[in-house]
Length: 380
Image (tube, rainbow, N blue to C red; front, side, top):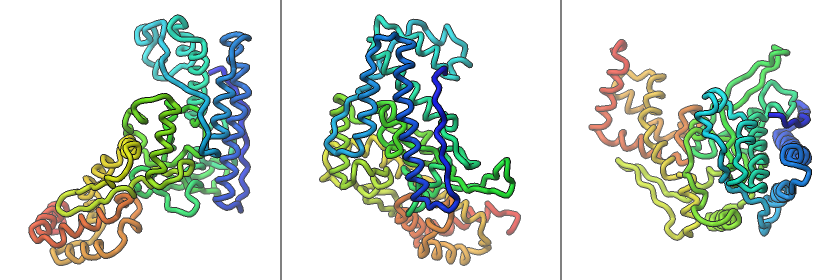
């Protein structure tokens, strides 16, 4: 893509706290966005003409600067993805070209007879924004062996455990060696960055760090519901979002999706039971549905047996009695906290009740013992 930005430099003192690093990182992202707004105006004049209206860029920047600061702020930039292409891209371009998502192909193939000049301007702005986010390493220079996204995710968790913002499981970590300095090793999390307010509908927040939250790769690959509030303009949808967050007792400019789990009462007594507060507003329920919280709870619960067998595989269980003692220990201790990778979710009672449903049912306990024997046939 022939759109260039100067890299912003993030110089971190090794003695800096996570809070200081997190703050500095956010400032650099905002600096990068400001640079984008300056450069995109020249880019639009080059590809559309000197008389192009660059007001959408000003609107985008105003939204970026004010939305998370002023609870009464009204959005200025409205984006509806409704462009039409001149050609059948599948027939005119190779699969490799399309997979690369060649921006030049997309930009030049917008049919201006079916797409206004203003929409074309917005399309170009949004495509470049998305490209910058996807290739963040090309725009941020950092004195670290980690990528900019790895660095952000690791320093995001200042006073809390590193948990996926959706399913709540502890994020696994690894150590990366610096290619230039073998003695320098840095920890990073296996995580992606999730946009709380979806970037495809609200591109003004694509590069906004207040709209970012780390999530596990599995949750990032799984799609949320398709509609961020089904009907209404961009402003009406964002008003519903604010209303929903208020009804859920949260702050709209400090939302972490994991907090949404607090609106459910979850029990496991032979079968999963999910109860939601029926006094919630329709906007709140629609928002919870968008993030698919119930589905995520069901998915995590279905992993109970897998998690249990993963733990058992690494334990020395040689009799029904030792299995029973093992389960008693798991039910009474915080296994969901001390076993990285085996953390069930943000509601540990599911795990505890699942274990107790086996422990206090002799038929289930013996069936599990038969599974353990089958799994470790070489021992018995």
